Image 1 (cartoon, rainbow over the protein chains, first blue to last red):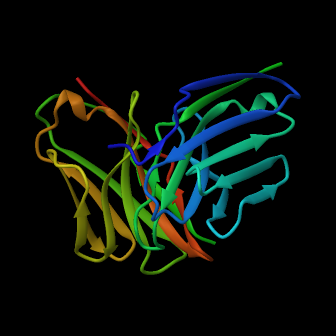
Image 2 (cartoon, chains in turn red, green; image 1 turned 180 degrees about the vertical axis):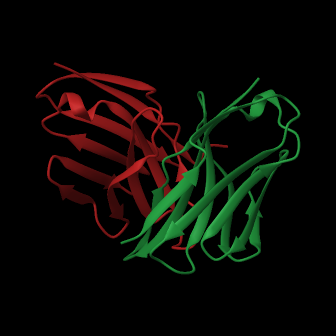
Image 3 (cartoon, one colour; image 1 turned 30 degrees about the horizontal axis):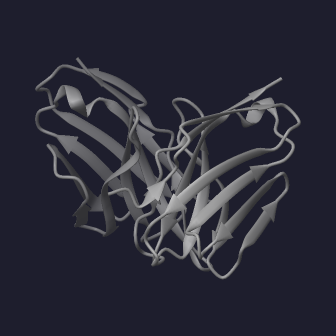
Length: 112
Length: 114
């Protein structure tokens, strides 16, 4: 049973436009959420996180929104750049010492 | 600053051969350590995690094993590889942050079992 779901395996966006990557979760105990970016044959790199006490966290071009009642979070990238093309993983955890649970990832392609 | 290294970066192994992937973390003490695997269509699958020396939790039953002989060393092993073991293996460690933990990954090891 997947506790973290990324239902869109891929997404294509034009350069300069907004990219919106979505993530749903089923475990109501999750209280900390993260997004990772991964290029082929490299380890994922941490992008941005959000605690359940917030509904929005912004870092430059990246903003994560959390809707606890819907058990949904999204990552917005504005404006999208070709270098943003990568696989994005959503992850969640319930307590600081429990392992992160990852979604299957969404491959973002930003077209120039 | 903290760094994580894993090796080898790539390897091609025949079915039935043993495996040893090694990971070390520098610049921190008593980290939580993890082994993940990225296989096609399956995202990032947690294989093992460790909260201390000699303490290993297995998430997925399979022919792989993990060991933590030292505080900052984590080893992934197999006695006999299967074709299905092919994938991209990632070591990771946790830094506790406000409200939760952020996990940091190594460079990855690409294993092809032939």
